[in-house]
Length: 224
Image (cartoon, rainbow, N blue to C red; front, side, top):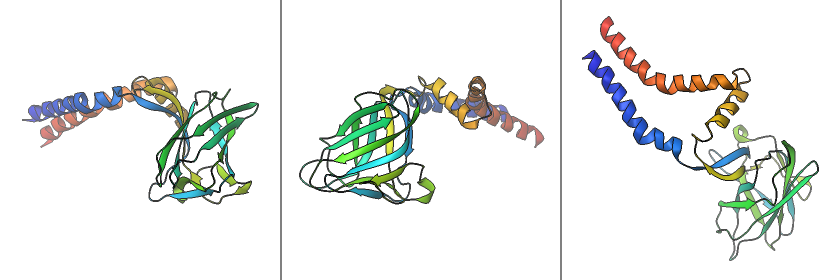
């Protein structure tokens, strides 16, 4: 009975891996380089940008892989306002725009940059509202979600509200294809574990978990 239970655990894990885990690993996804500011976990807030005014957000971590910017806008009216973007760093400047997007209280908008950053550095993102009515940069004011960047509207601080910002590469790649990058970043985050050691640790976790459960069932049965 103990062996049958342990074998059943292994079979269930194997079926689950084939049905859910493998597709999750191989499914192409939009590659995110960084998320300098977060969306709200419990509630949202927004920074209002009046007509013909500019909001600037700084400092933001720039990376040579950044080719797209995704944000959330609160817009109303009959037509989507055009928002001109300027991303700046030391000796670097790139442009893009939000245009032709659906109107709602939290519209996901995406802009293609004219050129990626030259190197990894801190920079600034400015958004110019070209329309005759105000728009909202949607994000959060939750204390647990606030990050380092500060938003300025017409040169003045907008308060404790962080508009949600995501930097993208514009590529579609699976987690499996990006495994090396993911593990290297995880190692860098720990500051202790070297990148090469993350590979055996990851394999030990995913392969060792079902084996550990099966072994625990066998040992529990023997002790009883």
